[in-house]
Image (tube, rainbow, N blue to C red; front, side, top):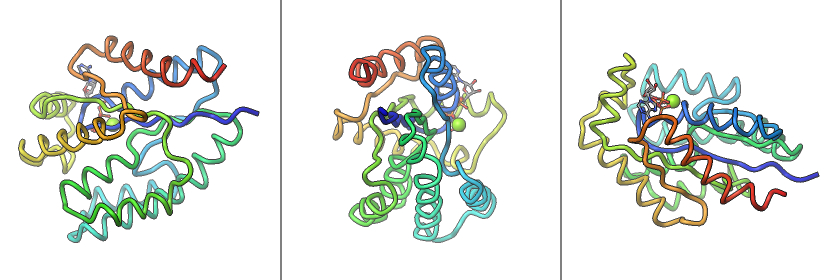
Length: 209
Ligand SMILES: Nc1ncnc2c1ncn2[C@@H]1O[C@H](COP(=O)(O)OP(=O)(O)OP(=O)(O)O)[C@@H](O)[C@H]1O
Ligand SMILES: [Mg+2]
């Protein structure tokens, strides 16, 4: 049996990750590919508890936060992602390792080497086959979040913070062009969906036959 492919959506706040994750799943299903959509933090009962904990009572120490995310990720990979891929199901995760690299690494300045070591512990060898990085100017992301009426604790941060996050994701896209595709998230939803589909077709479907 052919292993499933692992796709992640990354990018700043309100860039359209959840919207596009859902739409991509629907498209894949229409072509007959079994797919599960999951998210981080979350994806498992333990992970959802960790998500609630972090969003409710933000840890004061970034290391606490990093380790909680890592713990949730270990559970996510072993109980959801890896078993699905093993049985030929494709997995789409709304945020994954790159969010940790950018938020805990770039924004909070935690040691990159340690973060990568945690990735090896929790994820290897199941790194994403394809990562779609949704790129949007910070001001547009904040506007969307306000329109939506939900302002997460990250949404509420200053515009400079959002720009730093955007920069972090752009750096990853540049450093790992084999795995990452940068998507202009400023376009209408349907156009972003088309760009996502083109990336998936070019990177994954051509070789899946
Ligand atoms: N291409 C788009 N153009 C305009 N609005 C959009 C676009 N994509 C998504 N939206 C709207 O922007 C808001 C944020 O979208 P969505 O929840 O998919 O983003 P997200 O990246 O998952 O956000 P979060 O980081 O908060 O999880 C929603 O109200 C959604 O309808
Ligand atoms: Mg979302």
